[in-house]
Length: 395
Image (cartoon, rainbow, N blue to C red; front, side, top):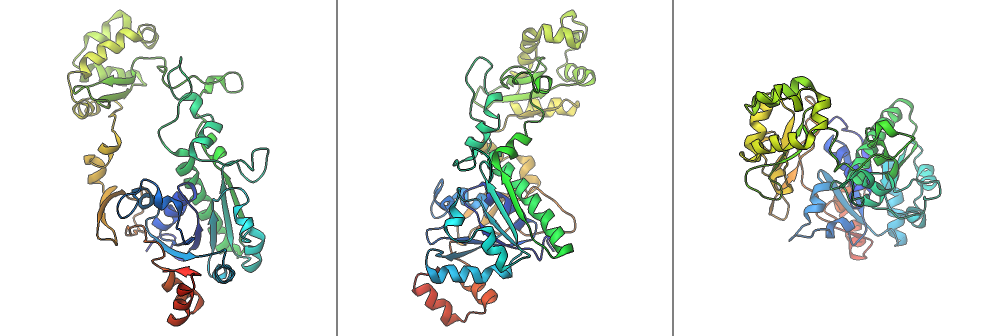
């Protein structure tokens, strides 16, 4: 049984930010009903493959899809009738969008006082930037992530991960889960608000610790004060044939020298202590790189890690889906989609011994419209077919 079994979520999220949060809830056992417009979540058209988008698959596993045209008066009333049957409503539309549809928090919570109404916005609901549109990289720029990415003598750079979207989604899922626990105790719902800018700013707490309130942190392309924390080229010479090593303690330095079979480095006056290694970081980097260039990145990782040296091969996005470790743990898995095609996807990273939930692929558009309306509203087959035929719903 999933840990959140019994939680029922009306999901009106799109793209990645809110959608990644509701996927976590679904992975943990909540019933997540994704309410889509007749054209579907625009995420269905991102990185389109035939016949489904890998992007959509990545953020909508274990959900159900119901299509309702909220701009149609009958569709609007139908949606309002669904609200009392759910514990949570989630949206991450642009500023003012849900209000223009007539489904703001006052309206829905008047219908269902127990409702947890969760809102994820780029800059939140208040403040000078509240009406600004936002995407992941916009939030990361506003949160300082660009400023610490790139070479120290170059411009700020776009970070590679989408922590503005998915990082905010994780915080959204945690907030909803906490509110649900409180709701079960008190019978009361509440309004949840998250700002993507603030969610990413939270991830900046380790950056520039020495300069907080005084000076900006440097770009991450700068070495962190020692050549023993850096990226080193490996045998193969490809664009991602590199090993990242992060030696922090004297014991790890000893282990690195032993793993490379270079005991001479331990007594070399240039590298005898951490201060000396910082002073001669360029020379030390060349000594380490001379060793890594002799080994493929996975081999170098296994050798150093076996000695206790913190390190990893620099995996590219293709290698993530073929990595033996992620595959062995079942995090990367093949799924059979309702279309009949097979896809590789990521599974839920949260593992709970007493709460297993089977991975179900993202739904086809409107796949669950008929069953959800019949169950929640008691509509007959004939009534649902009339709604389908009139274009109010799709299924």
